[in-house]
Amino acid sequence: AIGLLAGFRLNASYGRYREGRQVWSDTQTTLRDLARQIVMWIPDNNNAQVVAHKSRLLRLCEAFSITFLFHLNDKGCHYNMKRKTILGEEQFYNRVQAEFEAELYDVYRDSNENAVSSDNDSETTIQIDKDLLRADFERICRIKSQRGNVPLEVLTCMGETVAALGANNVETTANYEENG
Image (tube, rainbow, N blue to C red):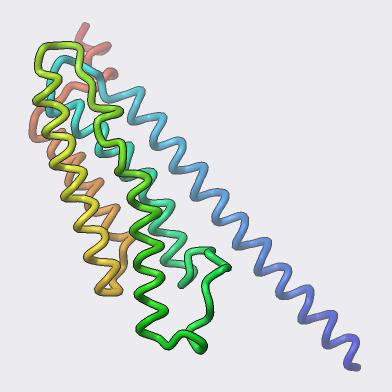
């Protein structure tokens, strides 16, 4: 009887693990697809703000993976961290916050890498991009330190960026091809 119970529990836990891996894989695939569509449909048309918003959207796609991972797992898959019971809860969360900020900093570190424009306004583009990215980094870290829903905040930033692109009447590649 104990062998049957152990076998059942093992199968159930493996099923949950496999389902979690499938959901994580689907999330990563969707994010890559979104990034590909951003690159494909938002044109690089000599507009500094459009280039900055495009760069921001791509970085937010990258940041979503990190924030989602830390949202699902307290330690963000940093298995070398000691457990809460050993460190104490506050010290543990301070360490998690430091690891989160280090992971997120890797996304936002090279902020002028994608912010290159083909016109003479490249300095303006880089400055706009740095300001937007610094604000995003600080906003996301603040929400994490308050133990809020960080992936939702990243999606909110994405929505704000898409709305800003729409407010600027940015023509996507599809609109451009339709209108000739």
